[in-house]
Image (cartoon, rainbow over all chains, first blue to last red; front, top):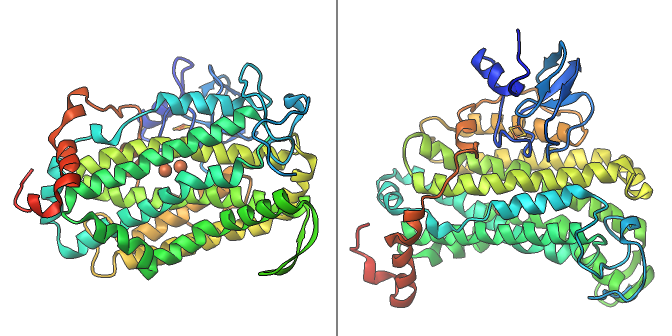
Length: 72
Length: 377
Ligand code: FES
Ligand SMILES: [Fe+2]
Ligand SMILES: [Fe+2]
């Protein structure tokens, strides 16, 4: 799937028909957490939710390279 | 040892641990050891809302038209939510304020607990709008066995910690003989362990138990019933999302050892005990869902589906604090809940600020409930 850097990953996944859980859609609830198996994402503002390494928050992460993700 | 409301010692509060260091003296927020708690405070303040701003006039009619088994589901769920927020409105303060050592964390705890009191007030707003006799509902919370069993499991860890901290603050560390309890050993490591387990059980309360109750509230709204209630629950859910992030941070900071190295050892040592707390709670929530649906299920939700959601959400929350998922359930059995949980469009219409249901509630208080028996909203 081809994604853009112009917006976070979550709405792009949704448009592609991939359903990810969400609640706040702004980085404080961690509902949208995904495993980041490979690649690089950034957060324009640091999310309030705890993000362990190897995970990402789909609602606020901007994809910066080819990535491989999976559900928890 | 004994708690001081304004500690006279000179110390660098940036070097204190989150808990069991010095009592906080100056409430200053220009510097923070853990800036996350300052951010949580700001976010929580930006969420401020008042239950009376939500119009519940159509909920009363909806409620009266529910089937008896649906009324049982709705009221039992509401009683459970009332219980949980009764606990949460006081316990973070009572249990954690005497032992907290950072000003930003102290204020986060107070801000957090304050928002829980809004939740409690909203249940009163809901209950007095849908039934004539709120007392019957409130009283049942302390006598209904299904509910009191829940109360035991949500307050157990808090109560243990509070008791230990009381002894620590009055008698200090050591072995003490107490008339009612015999010999009691108080040491800092056991206190820290009790604290860690308490925070884990609070995370379970807010991140699992509450979400199970949200599912029930929103299942009514999915059928366009009890929509005022759903609007309130949506506001509560927005707060709870922040609270659960707060306890996840506390647990993860503790486990990382960068706050208090001994806490990292305790976190490691307690891993299976914490996992047990999550798994036991999931079990209790499944039993609860059988009680909710004992006389029949409702469109979109039954004991089976709700139990799957319990498993799903428990897995998610366990993984968020570095535990292995315990259940096989891999996907959310009620994906429609997201659209209800979403907080981006939570807005309270200003014109609803003085709606009649609020005024009726006020009048009820003065006149007694029977006066409005025939009053239809
Ligand atoms: S939806 Fe809340 S953190 Fe992404
Ligand atoms: Fe609450
Ligand atoms: Fe809460």
